[in-house]
Length: 190
Ligand code: URA
Ligand code: SF4
Image (tube, rainbow, N blue to C red; front, side, top):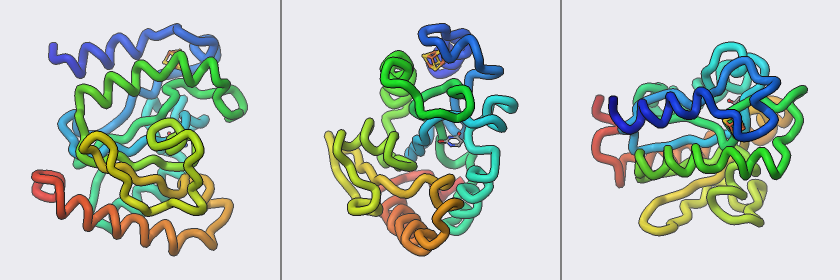
């Protein structure tokens, strides 16, 4: 078994925080374990919890459309969340839950060593880019940290509530496309 599959199986039985008691499925992630591009959302919702896959509800449909717009399918990238189990009633993850879950994302990050990381929404961006990251002010900017390129953009669920931000979000995705074309080797070639 490869390291990725080993990590996935360990994660699937994780009980490191209270969300283990209310989840249906751990949502480890979806896509290519050798992806050059990693997308990180917040936490699973009801559909994700039921199906065990990230972004399969209404927000996920929008995300798929935005990916399609820049010529990407799920299999060409990797998509996960900063918290792997659904918080009840979709409340924000508690700080203790985010902390407890962080090692999984850290290991995914270490094994993938992505070239580009896209943070979907404030929660992921503040965790992965900077604690005071502002999506409103800094979305779409490419931020280099330790040789890896990060971008924060709008969360697709936020775009469903505030569709006036969609043009800016689409513009961020075209920046993503151009950045992939500039630095990735195989993302657009399979
Ligand atoms: N919102 C997220 O942040 N992640 C999902 O997987 C679904 C909705
Ligand atoms: Fe484990 Fe993360 Fe699920 Fe908590 S949310 S039980 S830490 S996988």
